[in-house]
Length: 631
Image 1 (cartoon, rainbow, N blue to C red):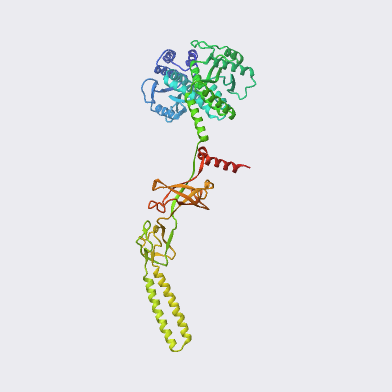
Image 2: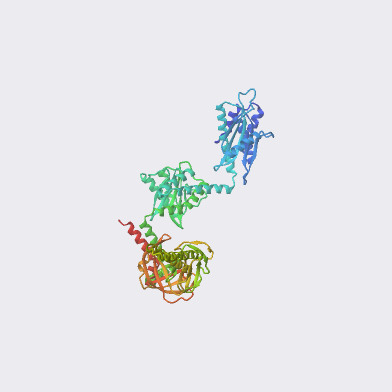
């Protein structure tokens, strides 16, 4: 509610206050409202005045946020005598929860002389965008137009309560509000990606928040400052005289390295403000203030605020402007540097680095530069052994497979993988009972054919004798086959070696098929090394190259080898291609190595620059990528 003279309210209230006692209470409330008083007295007198302005109010309450807490408490009632205010408490809770005004008719409260029910009005009191209180009143029925007028009176009147809350606000709360405003303005500066868009939005929002007619942002370019953004204006080059006046005011503040306000405050320190005076003359504004923008202790620009004629900058506004300028300086510098062209950015960085290298101080940077030069010189001349690493596996030079000679069943298997065997040693047996029964059957059949042959010869039946002779030959061939199969029921080791794979000890009595691999045997003292070389390194591998092998089980020992074979077939594994390279061990390893051991082998190529050894993989990838994209 705007400032209203008591005389006007007296004229308005004379039609509302019928009795002398009511008018005296109304006058007393105005006297208390205008004098020094506590917040409770202020709210009490305000509620009395509001009751006479609205008219027909039978009950009212003012509820405010208790300072320093999050709880609300009633501070004033109308009338003051205690009564049941449950209905006002309910509507007040709704307003505090929803944060908006509520008008609600009271069912069942219609009097005999009123055409409708009574109304409850409640309106929140906002401070800084948050609800800090609520005013609730109970009024009689009235037409729609008068009801709307009562709502407006209650809404306008709540402005006095906002003034009260601001007057008695916690200093820390006020400081938080200023900080919140400054952060909101800085967030506006950060929202946009482009420098021009962000500065335009920032100056426009700053002008709206601080009540300024115009806010200008200038950037120091060389020794001159240039206006880069003006609030509420995307095109400002046409007003050359005004832009030059703003730039002169900014340079005036930058030269003095402190904010300049004109007209100055009475208690402020004296500063030169002739350019600001000229700016006000040119723009016909009422006051102007300029704040330098700093980044890293250096001025990078300035922020100029202007207000309309008749309005001056108060201390809280200047404090907010100074806070915004101190926070916005580094952000403006960062956004400006992000849009600088690459050659200009490189030149600035080189100049910055050179000034620190040849200038005084910065001992750490100088030592780092000397160390970097030493490292570059070292890598330019230092050489080392270029070796190709590859995963390696120990294999036997000859690996013999023992397969099932017949379809049958395993009878005995005393050996399994990992056991050493000697030549001709039985490592497994098949069940030969069916073969022996088959041999007895074939032998009996052969004897029968022999008797038939003799009978045919005795009877001079030559044709029958020829037939029986063929059957005898067939029986003898079948017997020979069974004897051969019986001879193979014992699986024997072909040489002294190690069983690499095969374990039938858990499969006794299980059926096996002819040709099924049961054991694999490798010699004990004759090994080869299988290396899987990446396709990117295979071009540097040649026959006869030497290297060293380390296996996982003996990581502290090296075994020399020599490349003996390079296969032309690659193997795809884990997303990469590898070529199999075979190598022979240079010395007999004895009993330390076993087939199947895995490790890492390194093939020596030649002596090369260390920098090439450490970077050739990346440079080769870059060459391939560049070649793939070339037209």
